[in-house]
Each structure stands twice: as structure tokens, then as C-alpha cells.
View: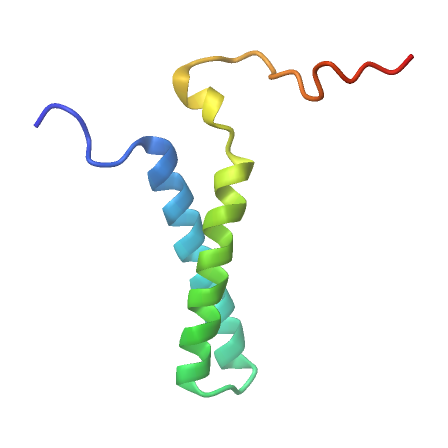
Amino acid sequence: MDRPLLSLRTTLVFLLAVLGGAVAALLSWMAGEGVPQCVFVGLAAAGAAVSFFNRLIVAEFERGQTEAVPHGEGTERG
């Protein structure tokens, strides 16, 4: 097998999501909630974090493009 199973960007997104979910579950447990509720809090936070970090880490940088992507192209203010 010559190529990795997951790209570096995907691995980073999942790692940050797992860390965010674990922190949310730990904080919930320290607040005195029960273990089942802490698990649900952690899973919900991890699910939301995947979407957040996926949008935060721009896909163009994975392909080696280092210049900024123009946003709002065609919406010039006059």
C-alpha cells in the first residue's frame, strides 16, 4: 500500500474533533453530570467539531496552493 488511508487534513480534523469532544465530556463530568450524559455531550461536541474544523482548515492548502482564495468574487462594491 503506497498511499495513506487518510490524508493529513482529514486526520487533523478528526484528531481535533476527538480532543474537543473529550474536553467537553470531561468538563461535563467535572460539573457533576452522570456518565451517560457526559458521553452524549462528548459525542455531540465531537460531531459539531468535525464540521467546524473541516471548514476552518481550508482544503486548498492541502493541494499545495499557498495564495489566498478570493472571496466574494464578482460582488464588487462601487
